[in-house]
Amino acid sequence: LGSALQESPDSTAINLVLAQCYYEELEFIKAGNLFVKINSKAPELALKFAYLASPGDERDSIVRASGAGEEQPIFWDSKE
Image 1 (cartoon, rainbow, N blue to C red):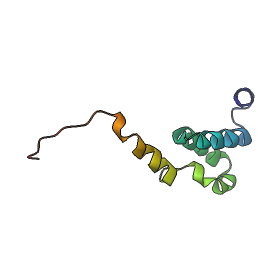
Image 2: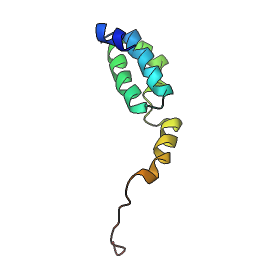
Image 3: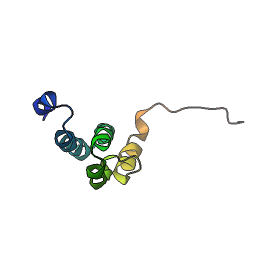
Image 4: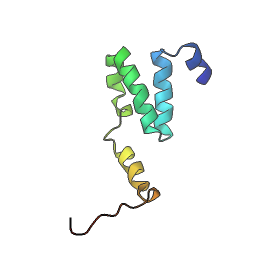
């Protein structure tokens, strides 16, 4: 897909397949970014694959929740 994308970076079909691959690999931000590109070029096609946008998708929420311990905790004054 990488070489096909280099040759035709604006191809809706290539971007759609790549977005689906990213989605299956749990790379929701990458999939969503490509979805925006697909939606701008082919909105009717994008409607059929709206799950790729995934901002509120359950899988996205699960992945984000699973990374909760990856960042340092934020402390605040208990009087606030």
